[in-house]
Image (cartoon, rainbow, N blue to C red; front, side, top):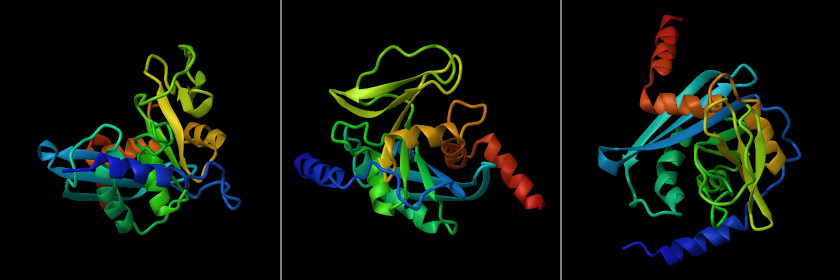
Amino acid sequence: MIDTRVLREEQRILADQIELRDPTDFSTPALVAGVDVGFEQGGEVTRAAVAVLRYPSLELVEYQIARIATVMPYIPGFLSFRELPALLQAWQQITLRPDLVLVDGQGIAHPRRLGVASHFGLMIDVPTIGVAKSRLCGKFLPLGEEQHSQQALYEGDEQIGWVWRSKLRCNPLFISPGNRISMESSLYWVERCMRQYRLPEPTRWADAVASNRAAFQRWQRLSDDL
């Protein structure tokens, strides 16, 4: 039986360690990573993928996938404890070390300010940004329909992220700092990791790797031909 009171207290302790400012030595990244987590076999297996891209070309240069037995059931608000073990295993397998990581999930835009991007960011000590496809908490003013329209995401008087429409006729993204990055920089770097798709290239590639999508298959064939 999982004691959520213990997990909630751990979240509180970890959330107090989050740094919402840019490191003094952080400028333009040479490598940007995206991470994505999914579940297989009815949730019995956790699959994590890390995709490493060169910046600013945003070309895929390395990837790793880890599959492990799922460590705990899905409990709303505690997803990072379920996803983190596989994420850390995939991270330990990569040979190139990114300067910035975009995570498919929440950063501080979480009821206890510890989404998976924040939790993971604390563990790897690299600037991380949460890029979520849906809202977990917070409120925002009506968002314009035009591309690149944005609104601050608030919980009470505290800004916890951004709501940003990355593409016309698509639902917005919910962007929030993970760890070791400022509120302003979290949106800035997501914007600069975009191409023509709804998702930024790092997390789009992580999803492609994890799900063996056509784009990743093409990349593998081209790499084999080199």
